[in-house]
Length: 189
Image (cartoon, rainbow, N blue to C red; front, side, top):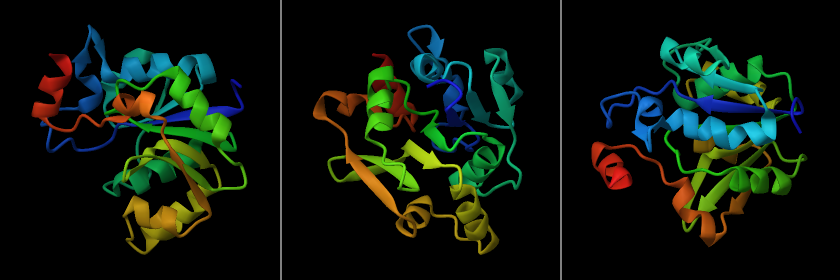
């Protein structure tokens, strides 16, 4: 599947609750972003795109791009990534899910319906648009929403043909977002 799919890692957030760049937090002697890249590589090889202005990510050896239009949150990050991507299908992740596995990501892709613009995941009653598959043409939709300053990602997804996949219970722990120092401490215990 390498070169048919681009993996997009959104690492440009302000990490206000955490107080530090979440992608560079360490779990089992590896940064969060390294854990995620390791899960992605069997699927996409080196076709990984990191959206961040933090040059520390360059050490990973993947392409890093900075937001085309700054301070537009995940909508702006996805716009930048999809404008840069060369593939129709893009596997999107945020950097705060270090437990995600190759098996789960492969499952998302296998269940992604390419007639949908977005495939997002869900666990219980919580949808997760930042573990999913996005059609490259969504860059146009994101651009339109940014022009109107409509920056709520879930609202953008509601406006397009999308699907929501219920994550099998065996993978529930893999999709937890680590956003606060307390969540991080609980993770590394």
